[in-house]
Each structure stands twice: as C-alpha cells, then as structure tokens.
Amino acid sequence: MSSSTDEMDIPGVTRRHRVADFYHERTNFQFIKHSRRWLYISATLMLISVVALGVRGLSLGIEFKGGTSWQVPVTGKSPSVPDVRNVLAPLHVGDAKVSILSGQGKKSVRAEARVLNDPVQDFQTELATYAKVGAADVVLERTTTGAGGTFTLTSKNKAISQAGIEAIAKKHTITGAKVNITGTAVTITVAKLPPSPVDAVTVALAKYANAPVRDVSVSTVGPTWGSDVSHKAVKALIIFFILLAIYLAVRFEWKMSAAAIIAVIHDILFTVGFYALFHFPVSPATVTAFLTILGFSLYDTVVVFDKVRENQSTITSVGRSTYSDMVNRSLNQVLMRSLSTSFVALLPVISMLVIGVWVLGATTLEDFALALLVGLFIGSYSSIFVAAPILAWWKEKEPQYRALRERHRRAAGPVLAVAAEEVGVPVGAGVRSGAGPGSMPSSVPRPVTPRPRQQRRRKRR
Image (tube, rainbow, N blue to C red; front, side, top):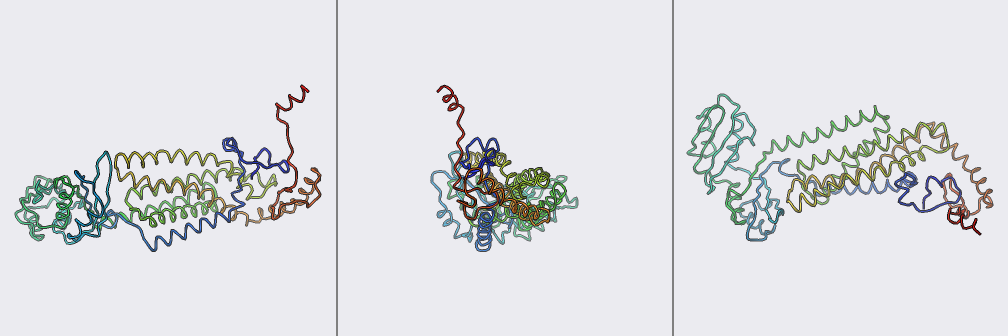
C-alpha cells in the first residue's frame, strides 16, 4: 500500500495507486527503501550471467572467428536439422551450425562451419594479397555444373601480371587458368577447380534441397578479418565508456557518472550472460544492437539523474526529507516517462521480430531485434533499480546529507507524537514495528471526506 502525493501529509491515509496516478505523476513507490531487495536481484542475475559465460561461452558467428556460410532454399520437403547434419557428416563438417529459416512461405537451410585446407579459398586469399585488395573483393562465380568458375576483381596493384597470377594458381593446384587483365579489371576463368571441401558441401546441400548449385549462397570470412572485427567491437565499447564518463562528469558530477557506468556494466553483463545462457548466435548485427541499447540505457539514466539534480537544489533549504527520499520522489516523477519511452521503443522491436523474422524470414533482423528486446528491458530496470539506489547510498555518505538524515531522524519522534495526539491515539500505540521516519500509527482511523454528491444530498435533507 502506498500513499499518493496529494494525501501523503494526511495521517493514516493509505490506498492503492490508480491509473491516473501514473499519468499525473502522483505515484509514491518506495524504490530506495527496498534497494537491498534490488541489490539481491541484480547480484543473482550477474552471478547467473558470469557462470553461463564461463561454462557455455558465447556462440560467435563466422564474422568473428572466420568460416564459411551456406544457405539454400528447400523445395519438395520439410527440412530438419538432424537430416542436414547427416548429409554434412561424411564431409568432415558434422559440427557445423545448422538452422532452418522460414519466410514468405518457403524454408531455407543455413549451415556455418570453419573449413581448413581449401585450395580455392587459399587461392582467393593469396590472390587478394597480391592484388592489394580484401579477400571479399575476389568474387567467384561458379558454372552451372559447379565444376569450374570465374574469379573477378579490381586490382590496386599496378604491377599485377598474368605470370604472377598463373604462379599463384599453380601453387594451389589450379590448372588451366585463363587470365585476362584490362586496366585494373582482372578476370580468371578456370574450366575445372580442384576438389574443395566448400564445393563438396555446396553440392551436397544443393542435392538435399532439390535445388541447382547456383542457388546455394556461399560466403566466406577469413579468421584475420573476423579477429579484426572483434578488436574493433571491443575498441568501440572502450571509447563509448570513456565518452560516457566524461559527458556525465561534466553534465552532472563524477558520482553520477560512476553510478551510470556501473549500471551500464550491469546491462552488459546481463545481456552477454543472456546470450551465453541460451546460446543465441552473436553476429555483427548483435553488436550493433548491443551498442544501441547501451545508448538507450544511458538516456534513461540521464533522465532520472536530471530530475534528481533538479530536486537536489531544494533539499538542503527545505530540510523536510533526506537525500534518499528526494531520489525516491524523483524516480516517481519520471516513472511514467520511463514506462512510456520503453513501451514506445518496444513496439518497432516487436514488429521486427514478428513481421521481419516470422513473415519475411530476415535472420539479420532477428539478431538485431532480439538484442534490442533484451537491452530495452534491462536498460529500463538498471536506471531505476541500480543507478539511482547506488547514487542515493553514495551521496548519503557525504557530511551534509548525513547530517540532514540525522536531523530528520531526531525530528521524527515529535512529529509522530503530535500526529497521534491530533487523532486521539496515545503516543506509541499501534505503531508498526520497524517503521521508518515519517511512518504513522497503523491504528489511526482513516478520515472520511464526503464526496461532492454526498454533500449535496445532505443539504437537501
């Protein structure tokens, strides 16, 4: 039971919150009073996240550790993960990650695996180094049968030559290559490519899906590129923390900055632990959404701290409440704004999950929307139940606010006595056990105020 703002000073009046209280910012939830409870909940979540991360680890996509991805639409059958694994087992990629995708009334099979000793892939990698371009810039378009193919690229090496390309092809057992160099455009046509694990998987998946080989989409990421992406993601996160700390320290104060960073770290550990616990794949889209939710969490925390700073200027002059009471009042004042922001932000995220994934079958949207869904929830939670209680606890250690709390505690006794005398209750009678400063006797009768309609009826009588 909580008191509304307009009835907070009336002894003995308690009632449940109404919907209008949220709209008019008249709620009086005791967020700070029960901060120990939120501490236990957050500590439990962090412990589960750390254990899940250490035991299960993250399911990193090929973009981070390198590998090859195949995707092919299936016709004439309903695909299943065990059947696809049985097809891939003889090709030494039985540990591949297999998933069934749905969208627009069709189903597709996607497999990801790390393939070693692939002469075609090694040729592409060395050819890219020789041409001074990235491995993804060397495009291979296979023939209809899949036996041969054509490599195309735009070279940045002005000294590239036909002899140099033929030497690289011979090194990787690619014979009969026809090289055509026109300016910076290079075309290499091969009638028959050497046996390749990637080609074997491509042919096997095409056969399983009742589809031609050209319908199998193949993308390869080298381990060097994947490692580079991982380092850039960590670097972006570090830069984010530095800019966050500087901004909040200048905008507010360093204690608010530290409390906000602790809340952001809380969000990071929870989100990472969630992905580790349920083993959801981590892709570049996940990292993008991850940085987005950190920004949202920061926004929610800044809104709370801005209201705290606004109310902080009056606390010492009035002296009617402690710093924790002021923070609790600030949280209630911005509660409706936080709930509305979170609800509005969740609508497009749910739309991406329902329409983008289940209807259109866009798996990239699934990775992005899932991270946003988790982040929006934990970001709203941490701004109210982590950042604000930490700030209140920390600021209460300062001499001026500690003295204010002590003065407020000493004044609570006479206030209770006067309030009890006004309603005719003996001092000390019926006081709730463990009631804090400002608590009223539980046996005090609730005053009844006649409604306007009742007043009119009495006048008629």
